[in-house]
Each structure stands twice: as C-alpha cells, then as structure tokens.
Length: 337
Image 1: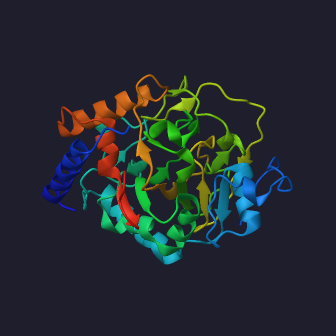
Image 2: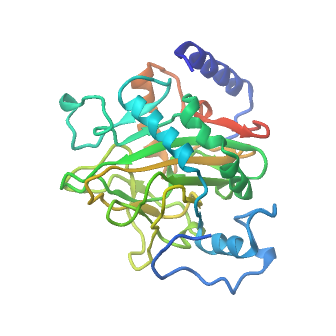
C-alpha cells in the first residue's frame, strides 16, 4: 500500500474511533507437560468447538497454553516470505507502517541495508506478500479454534534472530504477549508462530512455561542485562524459576499456537546462521479495548505512543489508535477492534 492510501486508511480509522463510545500435534520437547486425564469437556475455556482440534489437542492446549501443528505451512509459501523479507532488507520495498529493527549491538553508523543487520520486521500489515501469511486457510482453520469466526490480524512480525555477538543480546527475555495488548478478553487472542527453518536450542528456539496461561498478567520491564537489551524487549520481573520449561524444537513449516498469557521467550542464537520465524497475533473481532491507566501496561503504552509520535509526527495519537491501524480483518466482520 502506498503512503497516501495508508494515511487515508488511518484517518478513516481515527474518525471511526472518534464516533464510537469509549469502551474501553506437538513438537519434541522436554518433560513437564501437564496431564490430560483431569479434563472434562465442560471445563474447556481456552478453545472452541468447531471439529478441527481433536479432543486430545483441546485438552493439551487447555492444560498447557500452547499447541504445535507439524508441517502446516508449505515450503513454497515460506520461500515467498523469505524473498519478500530480503527485498525489504535491501530497501526495494518500503511498506507504510513497517518497523525495521536491528540488534542493539549494531551501531546506527554501521547500518547498511541487508539481511545481516535486520533482526526483525514488525507491523507488515501493509505488505501484501508478507500479510498473506495471516490469511492462509491452513493458519486460519486453527486460529478459529481460539477466536471464533470473526478474526482480526492484530500484530505481525518476521523475526530474523542473528548469531549472537557474544553479548547475549539475541535472546528474548521471558514475557507474556498480553503485556503489549490493550484489548481483551485474553482467551480470545492467540499467536500463530511458524518456523521458517529448523529451529532448536542451538539457534534459539522458543521456550515456554506450560500452564502459565492460567495465571495473571505480571509486571514487565527491561531486564538488567550487561550486554544490553533490544528495544521493547520487556521481560517479567518476577516468576517462579522452578516452573517446568519446554523447548520447542521445530522443523520448517511447523506452527505453534499459544495463549497471550503463556510465559515464553527464546535463548541466544549460538549458530552462525540467522534463525527465521514469521508470526501473527489474532483476536476475536468482538474483543474490546481497555484503558491501561493505573495498570502494569502503562510503561509499554508510553513507550509505544512516544515512538509512533516521534516517527510519524502524530501529536494526539493514542495506544488504541495504534492498534486500530495495525489491525486488519482476515475472516468474517470487523466489529470492535
């Protein structure tokens, strides 16, 4: 989408908001996954009945907060996403609203557009090629199990975890994604995260703490790491270090779906290559925005809004406005978000 069209879409969204009332399958893993035996169908609260997930899969997600579906996205689609990412890195395409991020260890003065200095592209909702990921029928078939039939794509990323420089900045602190989201209910939000190549502990696979999706949203902030921390890599300040951890070893095309309260992160990339994954957070279009004033999310609101104001010159934009622009309907109707 060109800047004029994107700006027009943003203005329409802002007018729309102003007129409304202010309402605010499983990969290899280590031990520690919860038991399935204690479940009864009437206890399901994190999944919906639509004859896609097996009873065992529903029980697993209910207990653990994540589910891996093997070989879900084709090699051909992954190659297309890889090609588009490389075009973005070379500066050949510049989708409006896209954030291109580099590792904190790379000085701005040394930044030369290439795949080797970009650690992540975020908010690719205006790049039609990358956004195809969010519309793949094989992805949405499973997303609907968690969101229902009216589906919004809310947050998009392609992660290019670089080889660690020795300062351990390629790791991602343990966190809950709901910390970033000013909309609820949390049980109607799900992330789809697809491996674009073989991913294991050597190149920084995801690590999850099973069952933590049943707990509350915890306070987050920047961890005190000596080597530095990448922008907006907030982490949980207090969590049970005795909680079992599961390292998700995934093959290209494998996709993990997980709850926004699930505590997760990733280790440093000890390999010599870049570890790629593509993801999208989806939400039920019936979700509603909340006011984060007085909550632990106030710090991320301030950081996000200040970043957007500085980047685009918007003076009166709010966190709700930011998310309304990021969101795109991918199935059914756009209702609240």
